[in-house]
Amino acid sequence: MTMAHNQVGPCIELERSLPSEVAAISPFVDRLMVLFRKCGCVSQGESDVEIALREALANAIIHGNHENPRKHVYVRCRCKPDEVSIAVKDEGRGFELNKVADPTAPENTGAVHGRGIYLMKALMDEVRFEEGGVVVRMRKSARKSAAKDAQKSSPK
Image (tube, rainbow, N blue to C red; front, side, top):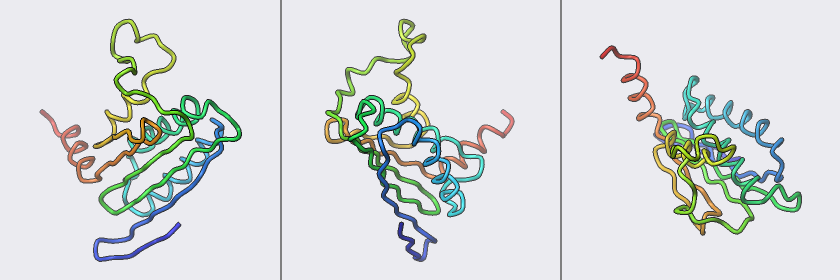
């Protein structure tokens, strides 16, 4: 992990690899969220980044690597005072985004899987799939979150 200080404020960049085990998700995300909050790129009540990251890691481990113990998931994060960006890469074959079923369609509302990508897109400002679906890049701006929170709490 490196910390760089500039005029804007502290910036953290880190790279980690996780085993392809669902049990590895929570301890990693919990520690990372504490770090994000300390650095100010994610506010205390902000759960959007946490949920999106959990979904991206679960997709990479379960659907990408098929929980293969010989494969890993790689996470790269950049945290600035006003923004967080995250890339999650698995060692799978990727997927075609247009073949993923719509979780809001009536025939899919009872499905066990299929909401991760939908949630990531709903919670983050930007979500991109690259390298044939092996990499997901997500970005969330703190300013947009603050504006959304103000809109939610103001009477209409």
